[in-house]
Image 1 (cartoon, one colour):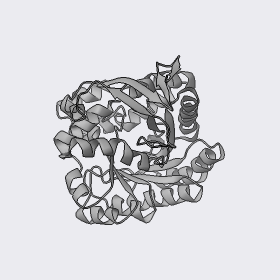
Image 2: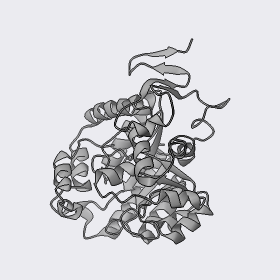
Image 3: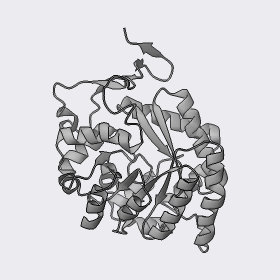
Length: 340
């Protein structure tokens, strides 16, 4: 969830300006934090609803939404209340995640330990008491939260009843994938720099590796997670959009499938499975969605394709013509029609 796009940063990135330089000047996550703090709840709901509709138009019917651009108690709760309200207003299955440990806010830059304690002692209890999230996430990365700090926060969240997931090994190999296994995380996301050891340990666990091709494409780093190697090692993987204003400002899952095939060397069938059936496991919804089976929600799409391989082949287009959620056709935010 975010308030505004960061268009000026995109232009700078394409000209080779490093992210660290932009962050030092007040950009990056800090800019999105400022935007969220300056945006009232009603406005945040409106812009988020518009983006959610865009996700549905591109075929997403189960959508995880994270907080993480508030980085204080009031604004993290504000974001999660908007997620709750979106879930009540839309027929899509919305999965809420608390990401209070997305970064250390500027006001705590010289007292990192205090911010970690704030997340553990104040934010997690408040989120749980209000029933605003199902998952807890932490950005475990060089310059953000160390593996040890992330593990402490995730264990505190798990003790309070939140299911852990981790931003892991995106920019550097920090052994966060191995930590995700130690804490019993549902998923380890990104994994661009995962080690051979990390892949082996994850392959022997129940942790889903969530690959985010739009992030590598949008940065643009063009360094992608070793998906082919992961599959060959037996590591269960999912594919998601990581729709955010910094690195992947795209709600198009068809485009994510295309990037997964062209840059990560998965087949169309593997990429589609990762974006549907496997992705349901990554949000603990495998018994409800992800495949067409008796007893599950009737969430399905009608595509303008003669062959499923057209989804990645015709990249940059939206093949979705009709969207059905729980047996009803999505007609926009105002109307839903029953199937005849």
